[in-house]
Length: 353
Image (cartoon, rainbow, N blue to C red; front, side, top):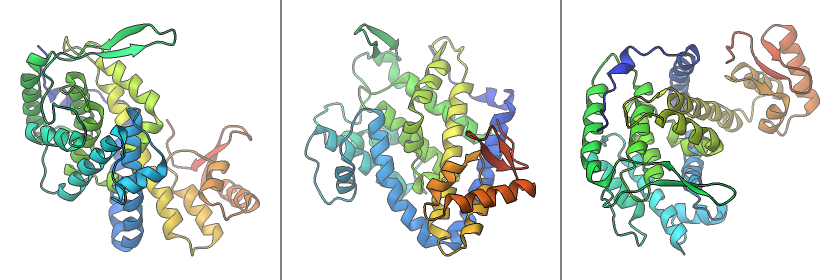
């Protein structure tokens, strides 16, 4: 049977780019905390946007979709769900609200995971609410020619309760170990949960709810203001590829967590990068156009193109943006990466991976 032990995180050789991402994430979190104190109204506005995006995107990853208008109506309780898909959407809304409202007191446990599953599917006709699977399940993949194959064979139903117990015990031990970086631990726990696949339905959505709560419990409340689920959905192909790579050899205790860790850190990093963009749009509306362009370029943590700046600052002319870019390149504040057509810009001391 699978053994759960995260002590390897104390000695694992972490690639340089992972360390860069974790360091930047901690720095960006500190910036977020300062800005929340100065601009509380901006963060209240962002919070209202984020919950709609989270509900929409976490369900969309599983193929559960409806119109943006219906999503907003369901999230804001202005309309009751009309069909099975909308009831599942409403369930994610309720589970997400439960985490946001109780993040200071909740802690990951088997009971909590089962409770989240109960909330998630409480409005559907599914019988096994808040219960582990009663029968073995398999993740089936169908190719373009219609051929089906097993993509992943999860833990058997009769071994699932023990596997979940051992997963939680391993997490508790690692959570209390000062030698383990919690940002690296979280994706390892999520990967193991997904490989166990303890429920017949809702595993992916539960894993994302667990991710949010684990981030909360480690002082990262970014998902309250920027949808973590949206970033996962935008990188859905990369998500499934990282999950596939990191699950190879899992049953034999020989898998590599690094691809999934990398994807998780990238999504979290993108959340903070997106927060910077949206915060800029809301908080700097009265600042001069030149200063806004300079702020975007100076605070871009990944290379940014002229087109992206134009999209972020739609009221600023291309000519003005080009002028400021030229001035900042000449002064050495930013550097240009790539050719003229595909050129992107990053502050001169920025590290690009």
